[in-house]
Each structure stands twice: as C-alpha cells, then as structure tokens.
Image 1: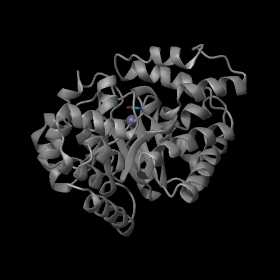
Image 2: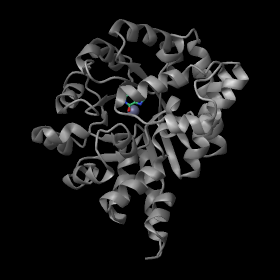
Image 3: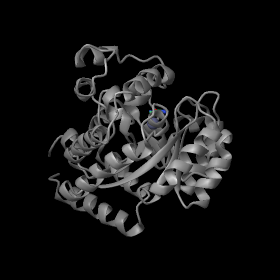
Length: 339
Ligand code: HPA
Ligand code: ZN
C-alpha cells in the first residue's frame, strides 16, 4: 500500500480558494522587479521568505498588497497565472476556481484589460496543454467602499464572458457582508456565481450574514461557523460548502497550531468542507501540502481524503455533468489503489 502522502498527491482534486496574487513566489517577484525596473523591499528570495511571519490577516495583507505592485504588464499576469497552473497540474488539481483582486491593480494605474488578458491567456493555454479546467472569480476588496466595488464591477462587465463569479476578500474586521448588499444584488442580477470570505477572523455572525444578506453559494474559510450550532445545522442540511485553507489559518493565527484546527470536526459533523491553499507563496505550501499537513496533525484517513476530494468537485461551480466526470476520476483512482 502506498503512503497516505502519495495517495493525497495522486488523487484528483479541485482548488476553489486560491488568490492568483498569492501565488507570486519570491523568485518570480525578484525576476519581475528586474524586468520592470522596480526596486524591491527584499534583496533576494530567501530574505522575502524569512519576512513571511504574520501575526494576523492584516499583517499578511500589508505585505501581499505591496508585492502585487510588481505586476505591471499583461506578460506579468500571464507568467504568474501559468506558473500556478503548472504547479496545480503537477499536484493533480483537475479544476481550479481562481480569485483575482483587480482593484489592487487598477488603483495603481494598470488597465483592467491588462490584468484579465494575461490571466485568460494562461487559462486557455493550460486548458489545452495541461488538461486542467479553470474559472475566474473577481474579488471585491471589502476594505474599500461599496461604490468603489461598483466601479470595478462596471469595468468588469465588458469582460463578462471570462468571469464566472464575484467574491469578497481582504480585511474582514470592520467590513461586514452587509456593506456590499447592493453590489451582490447586482452580481446576482447579472447571473454571476457568488462567494464571500467570512468567518476567517470574523465570527459565525459574519458567515450567517454572508448567507442571508449576500446569498452566496459558498463560504471562503468559514471556520468560525462552529460557534453557532444552528448555523452548523443549516450548513449541513443545505450542504453549503466551506473552502477551508489549513496552512493559511495556522500562518495567520486563526488556530494556534494545525492540531487545533477544526477541519476534521467539521468534516465528521457533515459540513461540506474542502481543502485549499489560499496564498501558497506566503503560507508554506500548495494544495498537497495543505492536505498532507492537515492529515498528519488531525490523523485523517483515506476515507477522509476521498471525501474531501469529492467535496472539492461537488462544491465547484461546474455543471453537474462536468462534476460527475471528475467524481468518476476519483472513483477510478481509488479502485486502482493497492490495499
Ligand atoms: N483573507 C482575506 N483576504 C485575502 C486573503 C485571505 O485569506 N488572501 C488574500 N486576500
Ligand atoms: Zn482567501
């Protein structure tokens, strides 16, 4: 029988919570700095990695937004995206739903079209050469106003054929879902799939509000849902998915250690949890490392891993037929394993 780590590495899976700007590895950061003639706050990749010690979400976001300032051209966004998709394919990710934060680029004078053309070019290439399917989710920065969110929404509409969903990210504290009620109403009217970060640093109330006020189909993080038993019952009954990011939660001190993470408790309670990497260039691992670290600390077994991988496709925004094709891949994979 192969090891659990090998089993995890090989199982087909989807990634549903990944910020493309959070895949900017220090090596590419350095290369972009040289190519674009922008001076960096870090002399080399090693120095950058050493500086990635975060005390909470905000301390991470401060560094993350500073690093995004290196992304200037369509080529930069293409390079960033294709590097992630190659890594994803190498870890047997079969489908990825990828966030981007256009406001962090347009605010620096970068055209919306520069960003989206670079990302889309990488998607098209990866769909054919790597056989991985992709969807793009535009995140609204919640530390900015709803009006500013509306303005980026206006800019996005001409590119609607390349955008599947609308999400909500950045600083949760002091920026409740309610602040973006009208924007999400508009997203629904335009037919977008919708998601929101909630219950990462915020409480169960934030998750409740994202569901009842924004009517999102999926919650990003959501780990604080366990504070509210009635909410948990509803999440289980309606099978509303949570995109959990174990390494991120430990790095940003949502949990003191991986052993204290509530992923297994939620999974065994019947919540539709999935494992994702969030910002892998900053948190010490891509999807397989997230599965492996969680499995080790929480003593997950093969049936847990299979359930998590199945959940990842079921929780995606793919069509029922497309989901079933991927679920069949898991079935074939597990039946081929020597036990
Ligand atoms: N939370 C909120 N906003 C973010 C995150 C996150 O984990 N990563 C990138 N933007
Ligand atoms: Zn996130």
